[in-house]
Image 1 (cartoon, rainbow, N blue to C red):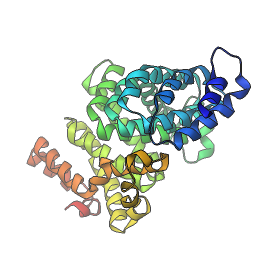
Image 2 (image 1 turned 180 degrees about the vertical axis):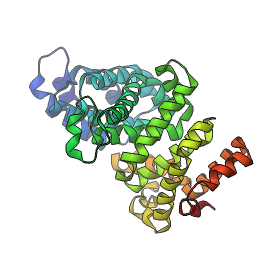
Image 3 (image 1 turned 90 degrees about the vertical axis):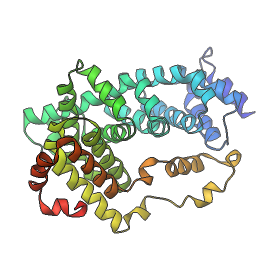
Length: 339
């Protein structure tokens, strides 16, 4: 019965716009409380792009539907609707401004967590816009002087708000952590392939995270950011990147290590034991979210151990003498957790 109601309300051949918001909310509730994607639900997604508009009310109702499909998505769904999903989301992202873009990114973050490499490939237009926004923010600060309060942000009319940049950066840290090569290749395309320009862009983005955004995230997101920055310094063969940012990245990682040592992890890592006992064919959306978190590789890596490993690799790459000089130039308090 409910599927018949949805098909009637969302039929793109009929003019029932007055039913769209109600239908999207009903659709979302059905997806949240189903254990798996039926063929009817898989097929129904084809009508979703017809009803998505840039109106805030419709976006608030329709984007959670996408999030629920992402959490339920099977290879069959992605094979059938992957291009439709990509085209609709990238078009919507291009048509809206900051508030709408934040809503889009928040509702597709789970796709980046589940399939980071595929996300980087299919969402390139969106990611290119996100990277450009971060660079525009840095350029805006250089032109207008360092902002000292949120009240001065209005003077940078072409620069995204800190709230928007935090959401963008949260997505980008996830992808740099799990798909470093994919993101650096994308940046290479964006800056015409020059290795030096890629390093410059990465350095600028890391600088923004360290200077303005990172401390505003909860510990779980700061852990991902720390691991992402370590991956950049460790896996991207650039002495310049290391020399410019190692001390600040170590200080950031040290803050995460201290909070973990103080037992703060219990505040953001749930108990997964109960949900893992629930059979897959009985799980609802709240269970799926917990299972996704439990499988997050960021939870399986200790930041202290990852930092020490990164330092060893950087030392091997720079050579003992050059690394020793760099290490000796870093404040003892910053080095203490990793010495």
